[in-house]
Every structure is written in structure tokens, then in C-alpha cells.
Length: 445
Image 1 (cartoon, rainbow, N blue to C red):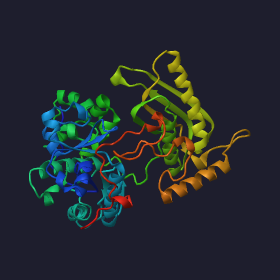
Image 2: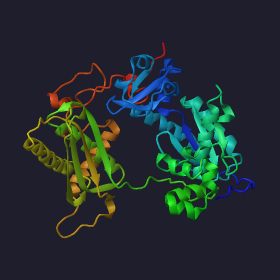
Image 3: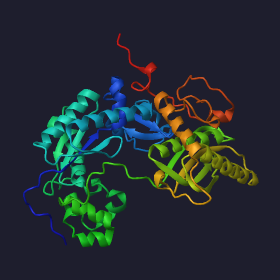
Image 4: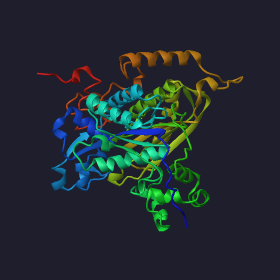
């Protein structure tokens, strides 16, 4: 059927993966030690569902995506809940990256809690990975595990195996670093291999493929024919043959989307959509991109039996970076959706909405023609606006339709404006911005 990889001498590791353990929960515990050892859940989507769970919460049967309000009383009373504080998580993530760049020649920021590193040529990759883990724990307070391997997939496998074995001891130390090779991945279940997921697990299990080593032993042509080229690359990397290098620069995105569930039903969603548009355009310009098209969508409240959904899209005559131009299109599309809702004779309130910028191109590669080209004056104004907000904080200068940060993020903050201006959800368990807001700095007594 297939053969396992030969028991040859393992090649030295080329890649490492440093991963923060239950990162969001760990960040909350850095500044609130009372959470340590307690079942902890971080909520997202306007405090609607769990997006991060501690091992103690997982032991209670809580899963990612679980709506908090659906937890049985006997469980909810045991759980410590926090609202997602992405500014805080992002700041500590950046500190971890700074530490890694001091120790490794190249670092790929893969996600907010995962970083691939280049260990090729290091005198002792294992010792360096262990030093990185200890520095991060000592200087930032986040427990990490590290996986090493000749490929990125093996490094990812090593990270998973390091996590599994370090769970069994209080002070993991060197157990939190694992060098994965084709010869020692028998204990890793195939569903835990990077890129396999639920879709392929059942099919692979039916074929007798239970472990990462089993997958590595399948012929490449067989995997490609039955499961596609991506899984074929995964199997190849599990044999220790690299199919890619670190991605040191984030690839250009195909689209930028900003959407939210509103804190309450909203009749006029324009302020919310204007806020989403402003954020999307800021991200667009920060990446040196321009948008060729826009789409807007609005949903009713499914919890009240309202299944309304409508979307509209429009291309721009010339790819734009101008927030004001995009907002004009957003207003036009939003009005069209509202008119559709009125024609249906339904109550108008919306519960969720979003804005998407698509057909993205590099701003410097746009081709002007006889009739359309960049509005240089408007784009200079956007550059000035971005510089002011970068120095003094997002929202210091903006367009009027965004409002004045009403419907505050924390309970007790003053709310101003009409009912529709209060679309922002109140995050009932939001921790202070300990590292990004002067007023929230911890005081030593």
C-alpha cells in the first residue's frame, strides 16, 4: 500500500515555529494573575462567542465558537470571561517578534501568536529555540512552545508535539522544544498535521492513514490524485523535503473586509458602515494598495427570526485610495439596500453589516487613461490624515459620518447621539489597555 520513510539519519532543522500557548488567555493572565489556573474564556464578535479558551475551560467542555449565553449555569459560574482586547494582544505579539529578531536571522510573522524562524546555520538551533522561549516567558510573560524541522510542516508538527508533552509537567523547560523528523512523527495524529483538517481526516482514516508518518509514506502521485496538490506538498514536507521558504513580506491581499455585529439593532447603519470604510481604507493605504471595486452588505437579526440579507457592489472608474470617494459609494449602496428592505414591507433594523474593498492593485502600478486618473490632491490629503492619526491615535482626524466614538467600549462610558449612533457593542468584560493607553498603566503601590 505504502511504505514508511526510511530510518535514515535526520537532517538538521532549517525552520522553527514559536507559538504562544493559548495566546489570548495567556495575555490576560499576564496582567491579571488571578486568572491563572482558572477556566478562562476570551469572547469575540461583540461578546457573542468564545474565540479562545484555556485548558481548564476546555476541560469543562467549552469549545471555540461556543455562545457564552448557552453555557449551563453550573459551568458559566466557574468560568472567568474576558472581552477580546486586540490592541493589547497585538502589542504583546509585537514584543515577542522583537525578541525573536534578536535571536534568529529571519522571522516570518505567520499570525498574531505564531512565528516561523530560520534556524539554518545556527550553532545549536535547539538551545537557541529554548533561549527564545525563556526570554519570552521572562520578558513578556507568555508561555511558548517551539517546534524544529527540516521543513515548515515538520516545524509545525514539532510545535504540536512539544505542546502535547509539555502539558504533563508544571515547568516544561526543554520539553517545550521538539525537533520533528520523518522518523519520530508516528505519535502525531494525521488530523493534527498542518493543512489536513476535518475535510481530509475522514478520507485518510478510511484509507488507513492514522498518523503523520502514515501520510508521509503515501506516494506523492497518489496523494496528488486523490487529495490535490496542497496535501501532496504537505506529505512531501513530512518526508523532510522543503516545498517553500519563509515568507518575510506579507503578500498583497486580494480584498480587505471590515464587518461587525452591531451592539443593538440599527435603523440607519451609515455611521457604522462609515467607520468600517475608514478602517478598511487606512489598511489599504498602509499596504500601498488601491481598490478597484467595493461591496456592502447588511443582515437582519436572525435571533429575532429576521433572515434578511442584501448586498450591493460597484466598480470604481479608477482604483482609489481616497476614503471620501469610497464613502460616497458606500452611501449610495446603503441607500439601495434600505430601499430594498422598505419594498419588502419589513421592519428595517439591521444587526450586522460590512464593507469590502476588492480588485486590489499596487497604488504605483495603476494605469491612468485619457479620462480617469488619480486625484493627487485628495490622495495627499489622505496621506496627511494618516500621518496625524499615526502620531496621535486612530480617529484623531476623520470624516464626520464616522461620529464621535459613541457607544463606548466599556460599561459606564458616556454615550451620545441618537439610537443609531449607539451601534458599537458594549464589551462588558474588556480588560484595560495596559500597554497602549496612559490612563490604563498599572500603578505600583
